[in-house]
Length: 317
Length: 95
Image (cartoon, each protein chain N blue to C red):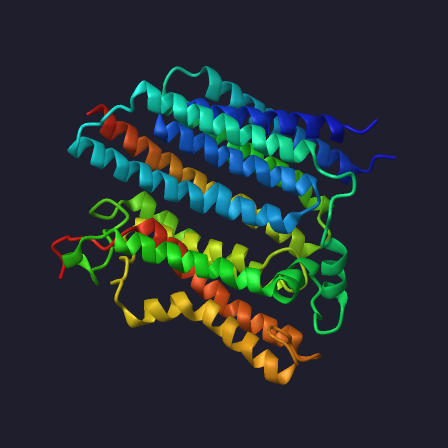
């Protein structure tokens, strides 16, 4: 008898427990920590479901980048609370919020319970597209993302850019163009500097490797980009590099490079290969890798900018 | 038949699991954050190191074995540094 079913049941139990503790915990920091644990456990679930690509993304984004994002958001919230004492929500508002959340949960449960026996699926079509002419990639996931669902993949990156614009626009008018506030405390701390000096070069190499093997093995642009983003954040937290001015030309170009290159090649597909986002047969793989290179660049720049926050009014010019 | 290499793997991974269990018990039972950090570091460094050592004979090729060692080295570097950072935060909080 195999031990795997027991591990699976234990894993599912753990995921639900950690999810509950994330919701129930009243302390913001503790809730974020259990949310990160939840993301890492989910990565294991995806591995058990034989989806290593999703597991990589979940570990990098759910376990890593989102955690940093939420912790910095929590720190800023604490600073705001200190400045203005908290206004407690009224009982009516609390009841309304609870009712709304319960209603949403019921609607989701109903949707799952009322699924038809054979749910409508695009999987066969996607599989055909991934193995069809013009794909030419060893990893079907990457082929589907860039070839079959190309428009979705591009819009994903546009959403990231919109999020960065949203974060920037929260800053004060006179701060516009300034760099965001530094991520770390003032003054270098030897342990953090050591960590950054050891981790960043290796991590950057692994990030590029994950992107490169993504064409033929589990990995890809988002996973690699998220790793590179994390390495830039570590370097900024160790104060080995400061956040760039948000009006820097190179920063803006790097942000839009991914979707822009994707869109230009997609439009060129109309005249060369006959339809929007079609790749000429035989050239699909180099073109896809070319697009993904810029995607990686955009992701690696957008995620740290989300964490760094709005431009600061600090005393730097 | 169990070969000598298999025995080596079982012994090393078993010892690694022991350190993980011991570290977890320490994490749950030790009285304050600094001693809990100490327990955690043992599990990370020794436990994972022994598990990686036990898995090396089972790696597909030399590159796979090298990756196992690299993973362990990265965890040791980041785990040790994070413990330092948490320790510093604790000391600041107490002052």
